[in-house]
Length: 345
Ligand code: ADP
Ligand code: ZN
Image (tube, rainbow, N blue to C red; front, side, top):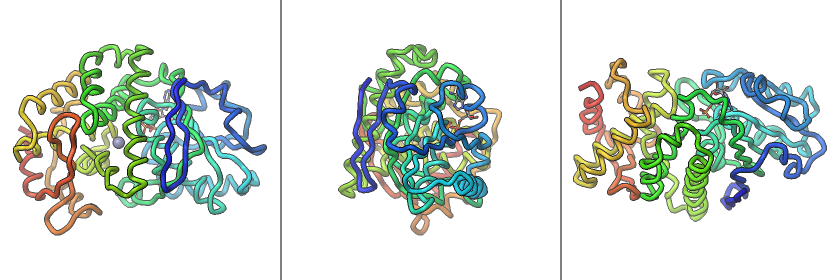
């Protein structure tokens, strides 16, 4: 078991990699515990949950909204939850986002912990303290930053994950390597087949290194360096198409990463050989754009125009100078539209 500490302006958190759910009790410092989970995770794993009342919500991004938050608040009231209670969130990124927001806003903040059950949540979503829900077609637009007391990453859960979910988790690891750590990127390139097959040593290494990168960025951002924005690599464009085309987050950001890398080449920042390394790795991971989808770029660009990172016709974008080195630069929306045409070529 390895531990990574988060120390941020929004509180501290301990992330345990390769820890077991059966040890969760020792990290929970409250008599009254409530588990929030989704129906799939409950069906598979209820028998190994720590003893607690369970609030079950429907799975899927479509339920990541304020109605679900209200539903949870009502359940909290029924169950007499107060500030001395503890909320344990067991599930994928959708559950940790929703439950973290419900816990950290109810009664001005109830303590909570995460047991992420998808690779994507272990690598990315459950780490960093961002909680929230979608609203009116915008991803994560309502939310807060509040750290869970702990995050327990137990690879036991990964064996029931559909293959596509494993691949989507790996997309975030590719992102982490691309922006900060060439050696992680090269490790995934070399071991992608083992990673897809959840080889324990390979997957543990990938989770640990990815979480370490994210934790270092979140910790550095406590000093407001803007480092955290680098984590948006592939996400600005990715978010714009994720909801429109109803594709998985990992697939959407993979397309976003290819577009960002392409723009980086066009601007003379990134070498073509690095661009092809990124594209080929995503192809090997089955995350390259699906040719059966015809992207309506106007619609995607339109949604970017409403993006909070926009100023005039320019939008803040994360580009690459090389694999492992990201920079933040404003780019022109027309330039983006032009690069994005590549998807339909
Ligand atoms: P993420 O953002 O982490 O991809 P979701 O919370 O939407 O998240 O999870 C993806 C899907 O996988 C959901 O349908 C969820 O119910 C399901 N799921 C979560 N954890 C597991 C697991 N360990 N095994 C099988 N399915 C899971
Ligand atoms: Zn992401």
